[in-house]
Length: 235
Image (cartoon, rainbow, N blue to C red; front, side, top):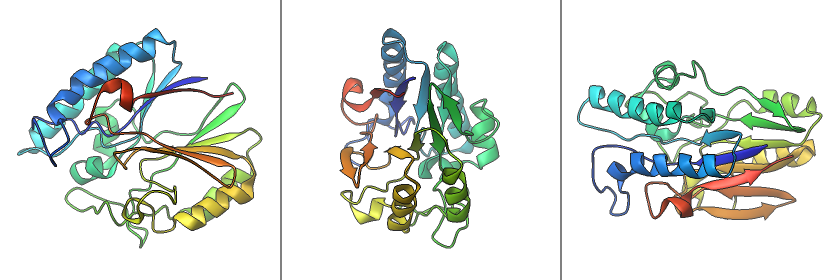
């Protein structure tokens, strides 16, 4: 299975935010990314969150998300998206996935001898989910640890985990889950997790921790498209 990966497009009408994010250019970069994915024969595209950014009005935010969805729909390659903290600050889960045509957050995918597992860490450390106007990128957690153990114990193929936020201990703590050490331990004890792929930390990172690769994608809204996207083959 060949995957095309991108994250943190932060698409909006703003030309420049935070001194380094060229938000308004991200739609064009997404189009370029999909051309690359098509040219290299990707079977599936995964967006790992922070697809859009805030605007002066909710109507404009919805238009931006629909514009991103149109780019995805124009490609013959299917796309699955995860919600990032910026997405959760603007949209409810139902609204976000409905506008993308997914109906719900991605379910696990099993194909070509591997399983893709998608985790939503847009939760505060008390376990409550982010909501419109109420999120904190420095306070993030994956609370469903018992269910995660059960799910991994039943896996009979190598598992690759996809999420927006970070678990890699080499990444600054304010970008990592509050329970990152526990989640890593669950992965290690399962013996089936081979890799974890995330966004969120805009510089990107690539580490191996106790035999598991932690790949963090650079932000699409910063730098060149070819430097931000990744094409990986699994199985």
